[in-house]
Image 1 (tube, rainbow over the protein chains, first blue to last red):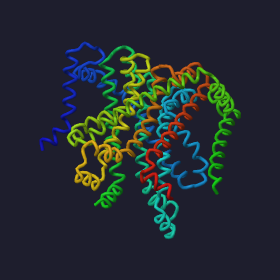
Image 2: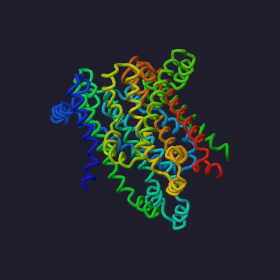
Image 3: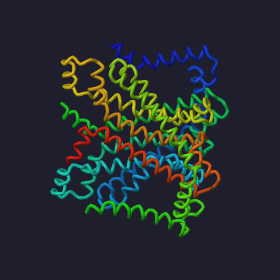
Image 4: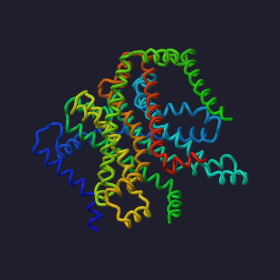
Length: 254
Length: 257
């Protein structure tokens, strides 16, 4: 019982102690101690900055992710189901997936100016590709016996989509969403570092330019927390959506 | 039937280019913001003849290659160790789960503080991001050793070293390849991103310069270049993967079909 508690907290605790000890004896101003960072964290982010910088960033991220999932799954399902459309768009999709998402920021700035819309568009246009391509693969991999059964029972197109195609593709869709999430977070930060006067990414870059080192570290810590939180929420959602799938895998293994 | 697919693909590409050409030509989007595709392609050809362009490309790709190599080397060693020793795996789990989701771009300010606008600052970002891709795959791969094979090796009294070389590493190789392929794509993204944000010389910096100079044609041409680079990296690593795993069921199975 004690070991179960010791394992998860042991190493992080050890690292913190080592860090604290190392920073008390050195004078390197780029690496403040954990206590200083924690202080800066409280002062910087709890208070008005939370409303002015953190919330807008997170809401743009949320809108971007939801839009990317909606567009990716809708377009992916269509392309996955219609063969000529797939063959028509395949080379294009391969190309767009290969474009490093951050280079879209200058283009979006050119087309849309420095606005909130531009940041959301950047997040969507980067995060949509893994979701779209995984959806296409997932839809294509629908079990043929099942689709023929569905056809024999004269399921309507809508029913087939709702009860066969989308559930069959959902494990792949979730894989795509997980990849999309990390791209979205990266783009949220960079779009703000680039072109903004508020937001998490802007704040962190601002602290760095003004040599507010502890504050900068607290920003990195906050971004880390956002990343962990995002991964945790995704884990919860995935477990709910794919409960049946994990169940089948368990049965097969047993 | 066999020509249909590439033909349709080419048609799709052509349609995209035509639409791109028509959008500014019909005045739907201002030419300043979306230049003619013919101008962009023309500029692309011009760049390809320019030695300075190749030098910048070389800088970007050398950051990419160095970063990817360091990350892969460290991840293979550490991943094998952590994957093989249950104690280490349990002890590092929470730390890894916290460090991995930190977006590597969050470290850009730190890297700039430490190294200024040098290549080393970009390498910090590239290595951090691509390390986790390989590391996690390596842990899974090492843990995936077939129970029968493991017991057989044990009853034959195979030494630890032989077990590592003939049993564990071949088992982990498909995972490693997947990890390296993902890491190569991530490393390219961050090599270019770092140049855009930090400003160390390379393609990314050129993109940022074209944007601030209002040179839309050059900007679009460079974006197309980065896309082609990404495509090339993908194709190359898929090829390497197939070659390295030619003995593996996942590749051999495809060829029989």
